[in-house]
Length: 149
Image 1 (cartoon, helix red, strand yellow):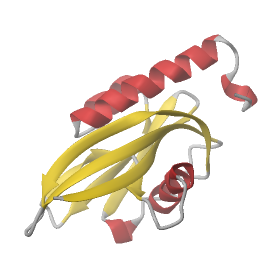
Image 2 (tube, rainbow, N blue to C red):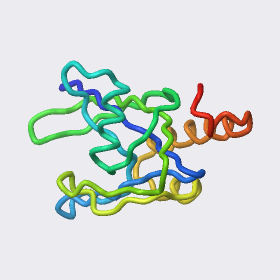
Image 3 (cartoon, helix red, strand yellow):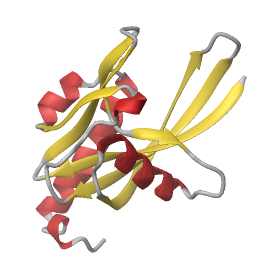
Image 4 (spheres, rainbow, N blue to C red):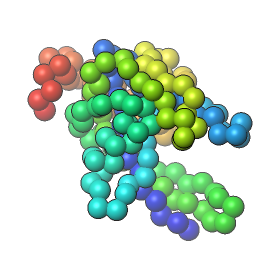
């Protein structure tokens, strides 16, 4: 079994969540949150910011760490056990540009209930719930727009 670690972000701007649509040779299709593999010498927060920027073109700011998801999948030669560390992030505009080299063909910001139903994987739905709950709490305390946490 191969152990792997990725990091990603739940990026919010004006209450809407950034999603990416991936289509890999028509074998994999679906809406996902931006995430990717940790590179050598990189902190998890650095990976999350880099992957959000690479996959979506979005310059985001980390607000806080919101949790970890785990899953396994099979390749032709082995089983991969992956841990993904997630961060709540703030964007400063609705701009996004999907990374074609990684087979993302669409991106956009969606209302919470839309994003929840569009997401392909249950673990990403769960992390979205956690992140959005944190976002609403920060909004309630009037802390979201201050970028001080």
